[in-house]
Amino acid sequence: MKRPLRIFLIGFSGTGKSQTAPVVAQMLGWDALDTDTMVEEEAGMSIPQIFELWGEAWFRQAESRALAKASQRQKVVIATGGGIILRPENRRLMAEKGFVVCLEAHPQTILSRLATTKGTERPLLAAHNPLLRIQSLKARRQPFYALADYIVRTDHLTPEEVAREVVRAWRKLSGEAFAQPDRLTPAHDTLFPDAACVVETPSGAYPVYLGRGLLDRLGELLAPLAKRAFIITDATVMGLYGEEVVASLQRADLQVEATSVPPGEATKSLDTAASLLEWLTRLRAQRGDLIVALGGGMITDLAGFVAATYARGLALANVPTTLLAMVDAALGGKTGVNLPIAKNMVGAFYHPSIVVADLSTLTTLGERELREGWAETIKHAFIADPDLLSLLERDAQGLLALAPGPTEEAIRRSMAVKASVVAEDEREQTGRRSVLNYGHTIGHAIEAATEYATYLHGEAISIGMVAEAELGLRLGLTPHSLAQQQRQLLERFGLPTSATGIPREALWQAMALDKKGRGGKLRWVILKGVADPVVITDPPASLVKEVLDHVLGT
Image 1 (cartoon, rainbow, N blue to C red):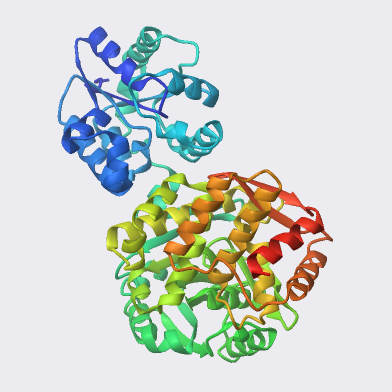
Image 2 (cartoon, rainbow, N blue to C red):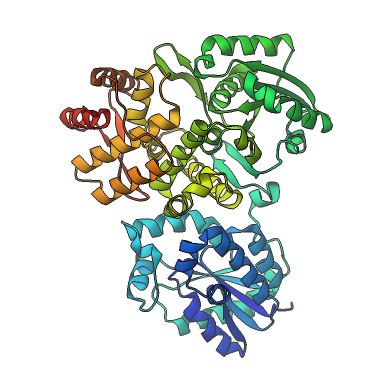
């Protein structure tokens, strides 16, 4: 078989790609290129400077341009950036043009190499816990690295030894691999080629679509799921988008029924769920039909619960129209309704078959509703994604103004954090999913103590994050600089960082009720650093009371 005349080296930073590429090229009499160097030459600055001034979105585009340009050459070895494999178009290009070799190394090896490499700025080393940062980021990329045609572990090899192994693999295996141009395509890329992310759980995988104008395409996206759709929304959203959504579904030949409920958290009740179940019964809904949850988090929770319980389960499509729902409620499979004495006490884990988030709907949100959504995104950044945190800090004003590029990137990254955590702990059995409750222990208590009438959910979570950072400070776990960084970012987004006028005893009682519902123990998420959360149970009551006094201003 004919061997390809290009070799692509992929893998995490510090695995030796840049050092190995010129050695391989010399052995074969070829040229060597490095996409990171090409991007720096285009920009006239270093990659850390690019991230700081222009953002990751620009870098990823430039990286793809560099890869495409390098791939026009023949007899070339191309060292690529660690994240280049994440984009489907990059994977397709490399599969079509050459032989793909992944250089692998243990996270500790990577850390040691990065720490001893002189003359290069290493953002990974700036993390509070660089080893954990490497482990976390590498784990997210690993499924894509594993798609390579050949893998070389470089921990105990010199660049020359690695290069000899690459050349040997190219000579023996590249012809056969090159004959399969779709080999770098994961299954969900084929099924969901345009998805912003895919939520993968033991129960199955489903795509999350993000973009503008998606309500107009909704029928096209939902048509494969059912022939009959039942839209559940609230009266406000029905007035804004109901006609457009119904028309889109009908163009795709779906039979459509729609109903609306009053907006607001008070609607999310067993009584409302019962009335919706009766509505479905009267219309003779049956298995094989589809529930379309069109609205904010209240609607996705309520309609998801109805979908989970009617006829033991109907397919569900979540179409979030608020920022909070896009980054949180619409993903992860939690559905439920409130009882008079407790929030979300009745519910089920029930995943949607698809999530479709149209960014255009954000333009109709009020200022408070938009800001509360950014609170959950800020939470995701602090618990799991330093790059998202940098974006939020760099472009706060643009994000509040819904600047197209940064907004889509921030929401996509926030969705990916939620999807990644849910994939690891679908039903809260291992404890990993608990990190998503950062800010929620006190946040939920604030909502309950004020009867859900004073603070929006994201506002309460903002105060809760400040409180839990304060608890971490008093426990000696959270650095003062981190608590200050978090408070400043929340304030830049116009979010509250304290709650006045609530009796401490009311918060204490609300947490006590929450504790009873969690087996007698309250779990608190504490940050030891960015992307370094830990979960603790029942810290000293005296400390908790001090923290409550702190956020209540008493």
